[in-house]
Amino acid sequence: MVTVVGAGFAGVETAWHVANAGHPVRLYEMRPAKMTPAHTTGHFAELVCSNSLKSKLPTTPAGLLKQEMAALGSLVLAVAAQHEVPAGEALGVDRDKFGASITERIRAHPNIEVLSDEFTPEMAERLLELGAQIVLATGPLTTEPLAAWLDARTGRDRLYFYDAVSPTVEASSIDTDIAFAQSRYDKGGDDYLNCPFDRESYERFVDELVRAERAPAHAFEAGGRRDGEPTFDPEAAFLEKVRYFSGCMPIEAIAERGARSLAFGNFKPIGLTDPRTGWRPYAALQLRPENSERTLYSLVACQTRLKWGEQKRVFRMVPGLERAEFVRYGVIHRNTYLEAPRCLDAELRVRSVPGLVVTGQLTGVEGYVESAAMGIYAGRQLVTRLAGLEPSEPPRETAIGSLIAHLQDQTPRDFAPMNVNWGLLPDPPGSVRDKAEKRRRKLEAAHNAFETWLHAAPSTSS
Ligand SMILES: Cc1cc2nc3c(=O)[nH]c(=O)nc-3n(C[C@H](O)[C@H](O)[C@H](O)COP(=O)(O)OP(=O)(O)OC[C@H]3O[C@@H](n4cnc5c(N)ncnc54)[C@H](O)[C@@H]3O)c2cc1C
Image (cartoon, rainbow, N blue to C red; front, side, top):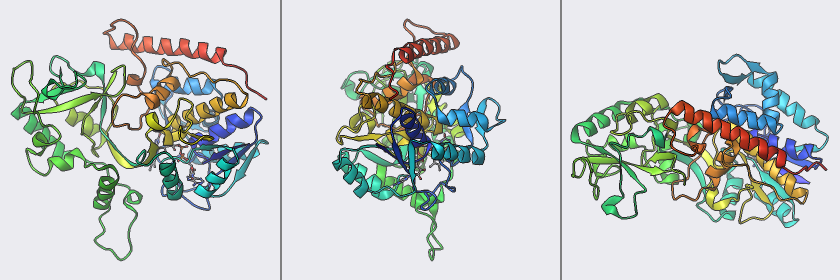
């Protein structure tokens, strides 16, 4: 018997895969008896916001991921195809029909028993004591008691309650004639790239940063409207909570404090020498590698709540980032996720808790499709283990493999949730300068590696 907790995007996929392999599954879902602050129905795999499952094009990372998921028997994609609505190149779905149909398929499965209960820490402890297998797929809005339990069981401070993420760009889109590799005072190697500002470019950047449009806070992220408190300001309450949980402030809020606040703080240039001028720059935005292959760099200390279009416009004013390709925009929002590289192994098993697997957004991926992909992956690896076999990791070149690599990469960084993107897929061997050719080769390598992996996998149906 496998217990899956949460019938969201990941949980339904894990339950489906484990049940299809012949194992009995008990699936806990607390809705509709108890709602999260964002869900509004009792449907499984409810789309809480956009009804888009991102690009369908096989020539995009999101399309590639969907191809791999479909080949692995994705329930979410099969149902999405039945309830597709026109959405250009994206896979849009009729959210009610989609959710109702997923719920029906899961409830009708002979190997799945659905329990409409909130899963509690006491239940988790009891099951673990009995040697049961639990898969936690409770997502970004995991109930507080369960999140506190997971936090305690993974060693505290390894579970995040808010995202405070800086934008990430593709390494190949950084202008390295301007951005230079250097650590402060030349200590610690050349891990960082530095984008040097002179006074004029700095002041122009700060002007635009403070004027740029921000994304609104969701009321629930701030703790909801409080009755009897007419002066309650959700934006301020939200930022207060974020500061408490992640110890950070949006860069635009720091810039508002004074024209030079970034030059003295986030962008302080001390210990740096611009090789083009031989002088210390007026200010410097640092870029830090996000993975061991250095195909992605994040903008250090640039957590932001600007709207995405505004981030692209404003951060492209930074010297060296004029043509930057953004693979992830900065966000500050409510979330729940583990510091996967420290807590999870490559099968998404919690290192410190035998019998516990975590999947979906809790692992540190972001989005409906990525979470569903992790659900399939967790189910697949678990089924292989239950058959007494050793699961093989998906190759690094594949879309699923690149998400797992993100969760496992031990590069020192502020671990942050990631959606599937070009920068996660490894560069082809040799130096390929043409962007289109490079992407074509990445896709080709992904397809070849995926096919080999799929056909080499052991048979696990019981
Ligand atoms: C406000 C908001 C807007 C978003 N917008 C988008 C978007 O536009 N596009 C996009 O791709 N992604 C979006 N996301 C992210 C997306 O929702 C997640 O990536 C995805 O749903 C995660 O899948 P999951 O299975 O991990 O969690 P979920 O899909 O959230 O599923 C978790 C399930 O666990 C249940 N649960 C929680 N705690 C318990 C418990 N203790 N006992 C029993 N059941 C429990 C919940 O009711 C829920 O059904 C958004 C998220 C939020 C919060």
